[in-house]
Image (cartoon, rainbow, N blue to C red; front, side, top):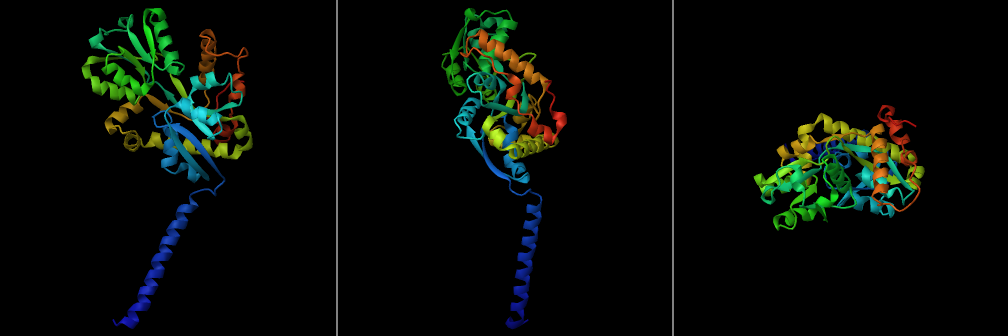
Length: 335
């Protein structure tokens, strides 16, 4: 074949290759909805808001027509405070924080649960004489005050007949607890994954582990503001649709999910599989959420952790319509 005949053939082949890539690209785009909106979501890089990270990483937000920026924060508290300052559109945190913030932030709204969580642990050092729960009497317990950690710790003490004045609570950031235990500044820590696993690995058999929330899960929620919810009902619906897609993907792909989340949180796959057993990812509105938050309202008032006299109307906080339009069976709130 001479050069004069090969050039047209090469040109035709080039055009064909470009056409194939164009068709493939178009076929991928056809799986996505047209872009209907942009928003930002704040989430901690922990397992509780995993549905948000999965929806982002696996392209589920884009599939429903959303351009979403997920911004990492250190905790559910910082995510929600950023949202209330209008620095971010939506945030994720435990229901205890939502209950507490709702007293002074009437604009706070709940769009649904992300996970039912049972993973808070009380970690005690055997070297400090802790073998049973009653051994924590007279000990120094690290806990982040003002969080659901404090709520569940005090609940644990009550269930076991231990008076608060029989031990010492040390207010401490979760990230500081491992060092405090190693330095002998505290005798036990009330903490959640992945820090539980990190502390257990460091101390090995010298660490004893107790269930920090016997008989009760807590809920991780998607939160926002009233004005945003009222201005963006269609976007809110698509957010919930993408999160439902993420939930189904996690359920159908447990091994792949453990690999993906393990890489994200720097946890080995086998350990992540065990961590995920303590979570039930669910985009829903269960009646049990209402019961839990009402109980927390009572506790906050008894502990004098809230200053406003008027308790928020809980049902006013719940924005059920977006999820209801996606799947009405996921909304089970009694009005």
